[in-house]
Length: 227
Image 1 (cartoon, rainbow, N blue to C red):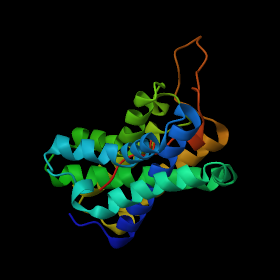
Image 2: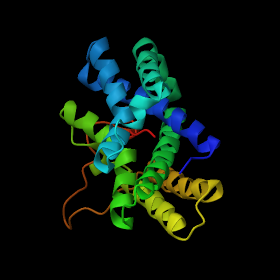
Image 3: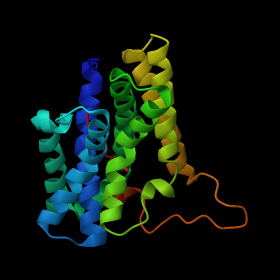
Image 4: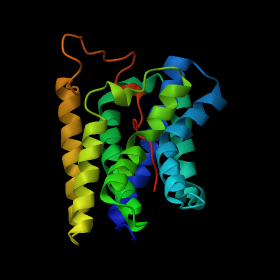
């Protein structure tokens, strides 16, 4: 199904922000050179969407068919490389935009999976993978516990958005209002998690580990996906 223009714009904006955040991780944690910085930015921004497309048989992946995704992912990496020290002042806006990207990626990823006639469960899972897959690959490459496993409600809001999207498609009411509504719920849950440092419950009697890096070092977170 064709996505509304507004969702496409948000999808492209999220790709840029995920590329930016992935590259910032390379700068701050791994201290890579420009090749590594750009590579990590692209992986964060596009890894989730490419993984989804390969799994559903959408070959070649959308990120390879539309030049804008790769260009924006690389653009985010270049900005992080050139302005990494100054971007500390923009931590809050970057986190907010990252949450927007997470929300839109989850919605679009789920809708595309359902468009390929997958069941509700697999479609919801692939929607979440679209949103957090790139960041998970990024963290693995720099030998960090993936942020999605321990950080301020990241996977849970993506799953919520994916579930709402799947329900809207099945009920025949999926469109721009339903898509934006699902994305808004994801965004709200994510920002509550960031504001109050909320996490999913851990094992009883064991303190919860928040990991080695904070919100400004993740992408899309994990954010990373593309349509």
